[in-house]
Amino acid sequence: MDELITWPRGASAGPEGAGVPAPAGVVGGLAAEATTGIATEAAEAAAGDPGGWSVGLDVGGTKTLGVLVGPDGALGPRVRLAARPGGAGVAGTAAEAVRALVAEAGLAPGALAGVGIGLPGIVDPVAGRVEHAVNLGIEVAVPLAADVSAALGGVPVRLENDLNVAALGAAHLLPDPAPDLAFLALGTGLAAGLVLDGRLRRGASGVAGEIGHLVHVPGGLPCPCGQRGCLEQYASGGALSAAWPGPGDRPAPVALFAAADSGDAGAVAVRDRFAGAVAAAVRVLLLTTDVAHVVVGGGVSELGDPLLRVVRARLDDEARDSAFLAAMHMAERVTLAPRGVPVGAVGAALVGRKES
Ligand SMILES: [Zn+2]
Image (cartoon, rainbow, N blue to C red; front, top):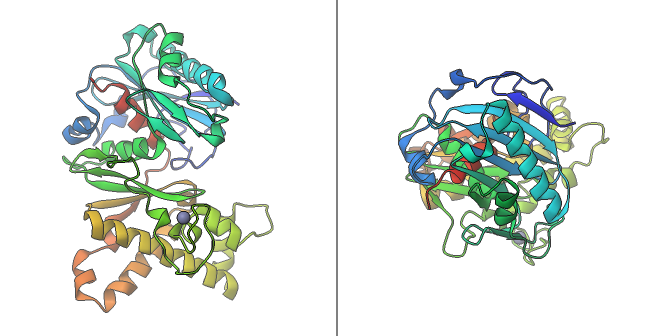
């Protein structure tokens, strides 16, 4: 069901990509109380100078999440629409989401400084095109930015990779004046988005943070990338579902952790292997970038504190015999993405108002 809600009331949508429907209900006005700790200078630097109202959209295979962000960085109304496949479907849904959000705030689309869209696939932020977004039903390059802009009467529209907008959104929500973090997405796959010293790091060829394809187990499970034993095969939602298919009445991570808690030795082994692989991902991120925070998001982060506990415990175990690792305080630098906030859409709104 399509919904328009005002943040943060009724905020139960779960972490980024969690896929948990928020309660329905239309509430007028902006939630000014939601501004605490956001709109940091560095986050703005990451996205460019703030230029007024903007809308951010996080486009996924099943839904589009949108949020209106005010000139001061405050989060306004948000919307959730069911996905429609293909370039025309994605563009139409995006335009519909923008119209709904600006109408809720009593604005016209022309009042927006811009619209940012985060989406999977190969995204060309400069050309405003996306291709190979299989989950969206997009194969060949689609000029999505131009298509959505045309549908909205010429409002500037910018595209960005979904992981990058999640990292920017997580940075925006930190109280730090110079947000420095890796957003570790535990979804179907495993990858990280990086905001270093307040700036998004895409990489020379756009693959910065693709740590899911570091070899974790030499000669291990085959990976679609062509290697064997990739970290993604051990530390992702897809890996958990494969290792613990479960009865199917609950998401695999939930079923696994419940079984482990009840003492099932097999579940404990799977959970510990998973925690070890996630800890390895955290360690790699800290040792290569020394980011202040590793923020864990994606569908698996819906587990909440039980996930955080096992990952932190594993990091502490590893630090026990290493003064070097102990001095890094790895465990305390890992946090979960804020629940009930559409982190990716927030980051997309920052991209949308970039002056470039
Ligand atoms: Zn791989």
